[in-house]
Image (tube, rainbow, N blue to C red; front, side):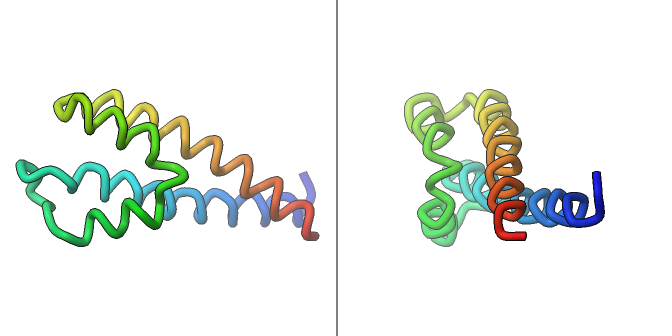
Length: 92
């Protein structure tokens, strides 16, 4: 892997980590029982809707299934990382 690909991989990792991480935090903060509950969580979930759609649907139907929602978000992280990496590699 040359320096350009390594740089693109690292940038894609951090972009994906922040985007999916914010989405996951918002998902886990949407319910009144959560210690991070607040109105900000809804707006954050709207911004990160492409990566939180499946987890939001799961948590809407079964709010106690946080483990499965985290697994879905982990899969979405890897998908997002790949897509951002491909996008960054095409531009260079």
